[in-house]
Structure formats: structure tokens, C-alpha cells
Image (tube, rainbow, N blue to C red):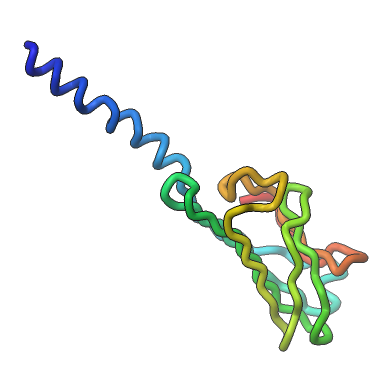
Length: 129
């Protein structure tokens, strides 16, 4: 009986750690839909989130294609907070954010609504991952 109890106690830390570690990791992709303003210049985009090893490696990536002048700056928002700027060149641009994340975003697994603006209007949007 004692050996069974010792074995169970030895396995307890590993058993408790697995659900926490697995729950923190995520990987997802969403398509950002063009608004009517975004359709005017054929805007399309995708957003990705990835977290591995219990949030120690986090990435939030937004890729946009649009028929706009080179050098056009697009603003990316996540969870209502500014996540960064995309500089369009050759019709496309990418924002990649890794840890540390912008304020208001605790973990990439918790990113909700994502939208892209040209400073005047929203051109791409989606609800959440």
C-alpha cells in the first residue's frame, strides 16, 4: 500500500501540470473581411496567433494585401488596443508582434476582435479567434 501511495504522490505534480500547459498553448488563423471602404482598394488579410510552451513564445501576425500607394500606413488594433503599424509596399505588408505584447493584450490566446484601419476608416475586420 505504501509503495502505491508513494507512486501516486510522485505522479501528482506531472498530472497537475499537463492541463495548465496544454490550455496555455494555442495556434489559430482568421480571415479578415474587407469593409465597403476596404473593398474599394481590394483589401484582404489574415491574422494568426500562436503561443507555445506556456506563453513563453507568443506571436501575433497580421498580413494585409491592398491596392494602395507604396508607403501607405495601416493601423492594426486587437482587443480595442493599438497593436502596431503596417507599412504597405508592393501591395502587401505584415505586422509581427512577439513578446512582450502591447498593453491590453495579456496573451495572444486571448486576442479578440482584430481590425485594420487607414487612420480614417476601418478597412478590414473580424470578430475574434
